[in-house]
Image (cartoon, rainbow, N blue to C red; front, side):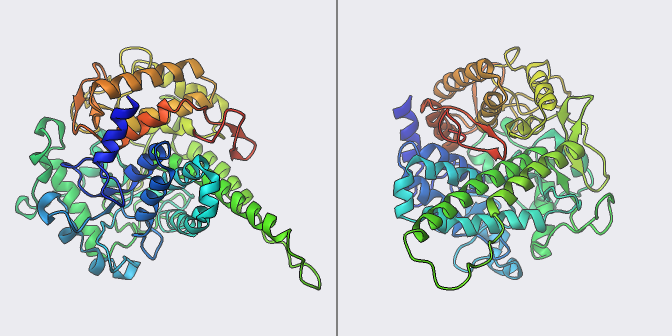
Length: 481
């Protein structure tokens, strides 16, 4: 299994990054590369570092990490929307888009600081020698700053997404209500390159795709400016974006990465303090002590966890829901995004227990009807076991849930989920996603993050550890190892 997963990652390696799939996704995707780096660290910590630094080198001046970095060696018609659609170097100039590489203008869930910390922990000595954390810290801080500043549309601290593609869960039924307001782009304005490599039965419909293109076009044409500002407690005012949603998974991953960035900052500060201790201090009074950035980030992560609970938790459904910032209402559909906050160490114990009940109940079938947790509520009329994010099970979300279960004391459930993940990954040929009931492969085969997260599960290291300040190194081993 290890050798087969490693072969997938070698086959998808371009020399500077890893494509999710050679045919269907021939460029570098943002959250894919973060998950891939987490697995690559077990094969080559150095290559995992290159994976992340290649992505970070395409960061925009405003701090955003684009969701696609285009490889100019790939034919322009191999993927749509391609660089000719996004026109990042022109349309994104005011937002600081890089001039030497073409990217999209959207973002994806911020898993990057978590990935950077885990990559560092795979070989701390190597990365201290190469100053890896020192190089990536300012880029990661700028990325989080962009999300916490420019994307705080609701005025409460949570980041808003302006397009379904930014959630990473592109075609979820959770987006149907906010998307219903969007007029699809004219059919002659776009094409479906994805259908050249994927079955139409598995992919978004033309209606959904037309709406995606319309939203991306509007965002590009306003220079990739933010979604507006409705202010705390207000909805629907001053919103430039037709689609503007607070997503629990996106924000849970931002909170987790804030904790990881706190650990990165503490590690760097400890190294600097250690080195300065060998040098005689300058004469005169000591300089004033600067605020502890690591503690500040841990405090922010804890505060945002509480905001997430206050803002998106539904005690009746025992699930986190997305909030539509145009209507101000929670979206009634139940997606796997609502389970992802289980990964948060500061999540109140009663809410963590409720999430486990929901995951194990009829809606998601953990330890029951489903082999793997589906992307959408099994009992919903919108559930589809085949179509992209409308029901199939994905390896990255199940990997996150395995970590969350372990974190909150559900070791037996986590062990069973881990075993099933490994069984299904191998039997499906490391598929992009699978039928949640049967584990049968859907989408692309030889998928990057499926192979990478298989390596991480096979590594056999411990789980998360909840410390007083969020994520911490526990006796089990590395954080998120």
